[in-house]
Image (cartoon, rainbow, N blue to C red; front, side, top):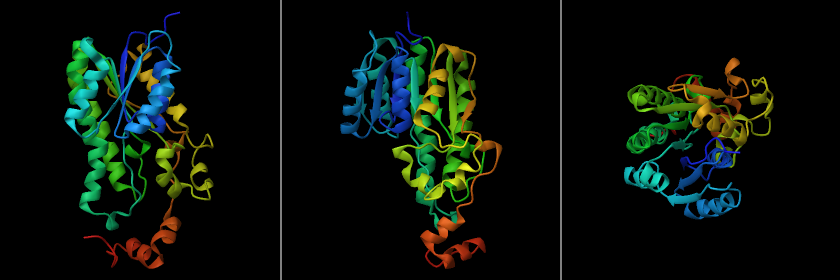
Length: 287
């Protein structure tokens, strides 16, 4: 039996992480040759060895170290993954979300979140389009978040970054659709992943019901939940899908996001939080 992605080449940016790793496994299981990229050379080397043991006949596994914000690194990764025939699939799972009240944030930290969530996608699209055009088309999949369309209090940088990512994806999908290049997003809810520990602690901590009570399916997501959507958007089943975002969030978009003010009081103290709620700049606010 021929697998759906046999003969296809795929690059996973952020491929050693929870969602990226699960996505790599899903594409490999469908027959694609997978190249994973990350700044953590040791981690991706070990993961590539693990993947290679699972590869179906005809599928190859490779890895390359690189920074998603450095254009030359991403161009090199695209060339490594695509080879002479060009690239078929690119999945980027990189992102950065920080829980910080807006008045305690600073311009540099805020901008850093925009760069990792938006600029990294711009760099990937710019690097991938020529290689995908050479291959006769391709599919790009980015991980956004329900925070692109829902407010998560005290995560203004992340919400703005993911909203910007989705706007970029829509514009690029329109611009390159005539080349047979499809560009889409997945919008996860809160995923139980080692890469998500700090943010997850703010929204669940010792009382996960604060988040789960607003989730109709009653559990946090798993990387495998997102990998199924990655596989769909990367494969032939979604050949008429572009410029959209598929929500995979257990249903939390149907309700409201949890209030974590009490956790902020635990972290910053009552005096600081009271000042913030009054719209005042606390004495310890960054410049």
